[in-house]
Image (tube, rainbow, N blue to C red; front, side, top):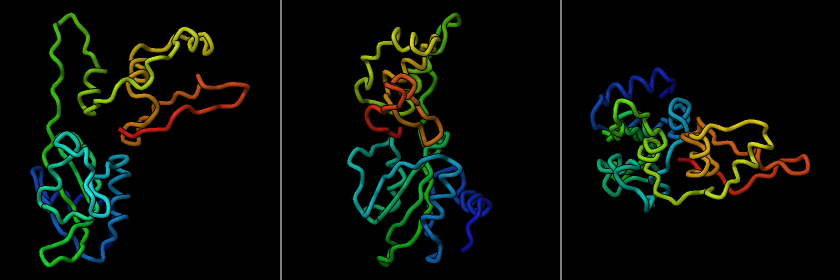
Length: 198
């Protein structure tokens, strides 16, 4: 089976807007399908790898995608897209043969927090709810006056809250939370900590 973005569109159309899944032809390269979906939706979340399910998996992280396969999923990667989870990888069919799969499931999207007409929406609270972030603050100790003094500019308060909350990393492979400007010392960049994907 030749894979193109048009083929992916056709496959997703066959599944429709609700919950659904399909086993794909055995000659389809699951990595190629993952790559095409990744170029469309960003970096995937790995739900199952070599038959082992991520122990932190729950409804807010795409657990609904595994329901059709019971314990037969071999490798499943997933993307959150609007009110839908999209997943692909491999699973054993009824005969035990490992085959490529495509699966979609409904995703609950948190509603905007209610605010009074004269108040601004707290976008950081919304981002925390959307990502399901439950970790403690990653960079609560940033000396913002010193950073802003070195940069020669005031940074937006939302950016500061994002850095303090999430630390260094990326959102779905599209939005990098870059902190390099503050870690320059002696003319060369020094990265602090590892990067995380939300």
